[in-house]
Length: 130
Image (cartoon, rainbow, N blue to C red):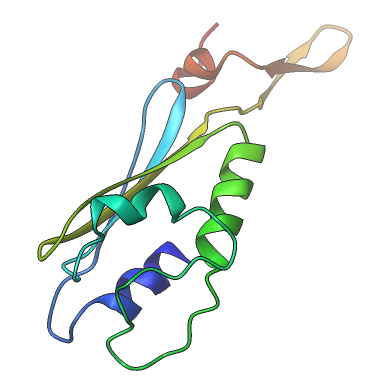
């Protein structure tokens, strides 16, 4: 949805950039566009279902106003957060982070057979040590 919105609201021949990186505790995804931007007074309502701001899709595509409310709900239900920074006439940047929760399985063979160890410490799992 974030990428689709960035494309839908950006003029042709402008860039939409997606960034992604991981920290020790989270995965962070950003979507940045060069669209019309969002007026400050509209930002608090962006997350409401059926909310449509003053910007219009550049290709005349329909917009139900449900997408951002669904994205925010999914991100928050996953323990993350979604933010937006925008300047009218310059574009918008939506960024969300999700907590890094992984379980890496390590196996080793002992004298009595194969034993599996589950690593739940994210930093240790990412570096293969405990």
